Image (cartoon, rainbow, N blue to C red; front, side):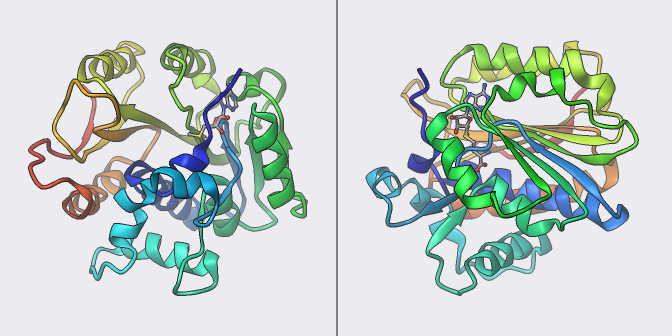
Length: 279
Ligand code: SAM
C-alpha cells in the first residue's frame, strides 16, 4: 500500500533543487539535439494547486518556492527556473506548482518522446487528466524501476531519466542501485538524475558509497543541506546523483546551488553545498 502523496511536499526546498537541476539538464540536452527521450520513473500527478488541502496542510512550499519566487538574482539558472515556473502559470502570481512531468512537457515539443510512470492509481489518474492530450507523452501505471524490462529505448537516442522515489520504503535505496547497475549499459546517451533525501547522514553516506562501488565513471553529486545534521525526524536537505553529465557544464551549477542554499537554508546551518564528481 503506497501512502506517499507528493502534494504534501510540492514546491519545498528539495523540489526547488531538483527542478532547477532538471531544467538545467533538459535545456542543455535540447540545445544540441533535435529530439530527445525523457523518462520520469516516479512521476506523481504533475501539477499541484496551492489551494489544495494537501498543499495547505504543512505548507512545505514555504521552505522552497515561496522563499525565492520574488528573488532578484543575476544567476542564469535560478532566473530561468523562476521564469519557467511563472511561464507555466501564465502569470506573475503563481497558483500552482509544476511537478517534474509538467516541467518536462513545457520544455520539450512534440518531436520529443516523454514517458511518465506512476504506480499509485490516484496519482496515475491525475497524470492522465493533466497530460492525456499530448500525443508524444506515454503514461504508464506501473513500477518505474521495471520500465526498461519492456521498453527498450534506442541506444542512439539522447535524453534524460529522472529517478525520483520517495524513499518512504527503505528498499528504494537498494532498488535505485540495482536499477542503475542493471541498466547502465543502455544509458550511453542519456543523462540520469537520481534524487535523494538527506534524512540520516550515515544512510546518505552508505548510498553515495554504493554509487562509488558501481565503478561508473564521472558520477556527479549535487547536495544542498538547509540545516545541520540532526537526529530528529525529517529532511535536513536533499541531493541528486547525476550520471553521464558533461563535466565542465555540470560544475557551472555550483555557483547557482550555493546561491540557492543561501536563500533557503535556516539561519544556523553550517553544512555546505556539494557539487563534485565522486572519486
Ligand atoms: N517526480 C515528481 C516531481 O518532481 O514532481 C515527484 C515524485 S514523488 C517524490 C514519488 C512518486 O513515486 C509518488 O507519486 C509515488 O506514488 C510514486 N511511486 C512510488 N513507488 C513507485 C514505483 N515503484 N514506480 C513508480 N512510481 C512509484
